[in-house]
Length: 425
Image 1 (tube, helix red, strand yellow):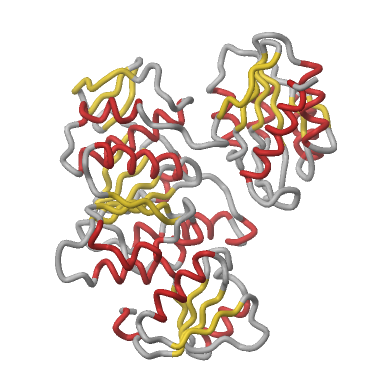
Image 2 (cartoon, rainbow, N blue to C red):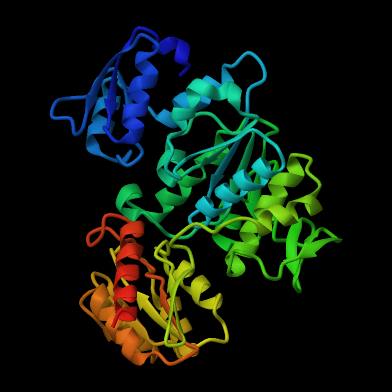
């Protein structure tokens, strides 16, 4: 659907959050009659612009489509506005992945900005893409972080697409993990012929689900941008050392390889990126060291919502004694590998609800050490009593936050508050 077809139409905006309000303003500037609904009590009809948090699998949507209603999104409207520009439109980069997309998007933005590009950053990172649609001429490049919700109904592809990884996630929205994979990778299917995508060679699930895709550039393989033995390489060309970076963990080394692959496609000399990568300030709640109390480091990795990311976080502190705080909303994720990892590495786990009981069962079955606690406060106090100088107390929940907290940011903030209250004693 092109924006030209929406002029002077009656349009419903479903969702009144920041994106919904931005969509309403955007459409009203184009002489549309816009009605905003929070949760429709009557049937939906005509053109509906849906907010990302509303699942495409809701019955209201399938019923409305049967009667001819058309659904789109603020991201689609943004893409159409950019693609309709007669000349000098910004280069559009879409970044997705189960984990790492905020850090990778922000790092692409940071490096490009430091290199002198006029660059915008929007999407799932918190600024709806549609907010940039009125000022597209101000940008050379726009980086859009794309959640699986935003990828699902995407109609237009990006000039360059980045896919970091695939892990089981968001079953509550997508209903099944297979739906999640399919919906997430719609971002690749809507590309125009010849448009390239940068894809992680190391992620098995991603490799399986993209095996028939064309125009892929792989990173984390020996032919592309990769890291080996403390150095970044582009094929056989040695670039710069991977030591003493601001981003911790092997998963962030992989994310930097994705960023360098983007820069290569843009024609940037990769060695010029080193200083800008080193000047990047990591985002909060991502392996953020928030306190050092009695010789013990307290680390906030509240962004971790899967077992795979919790394992990656623990690997970032290999060689240290770790106490893991885990647990949260249950998305039917498999904790077998997490249980095996903590058992093999003698990592005690403090398991919080709602998934705490299930984590306890898995860790106990694996032969590991685990304690069930009722909330964050109890977990922090117990970790404090267990920890010795040199230890790391790591909040990496391996589960989403909601049901107990509004979002992962609030969960991380509560962890920090409880940790800092220990320091005050």
